[in-house]
Image (tube, rainbow, N blue to C red; front, side):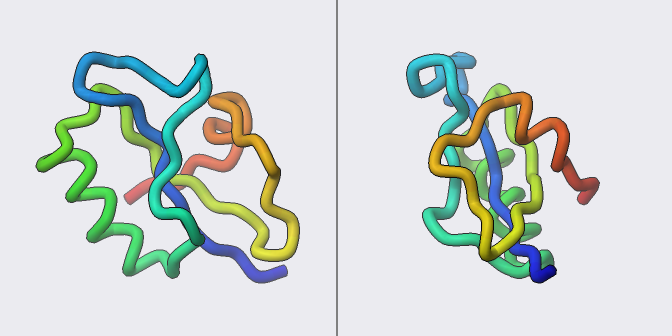
Length: 76
């Protein structure tokens, strides 16, 4: 299986999209690229919650929940 990486986040006030996380970027990136994006979300956007996670490139859920994110969370 091939994996890509995304970031689930809330805004700086902890608000989400109808209870689900905002997802960045729109297409999965490689791990070293997602580190740069994670730092942007954390330091520039100043998201209250930001969690990098991995997805199977051929099996990305249509809707991504916080539970899915936590089950697939990676450490940066």
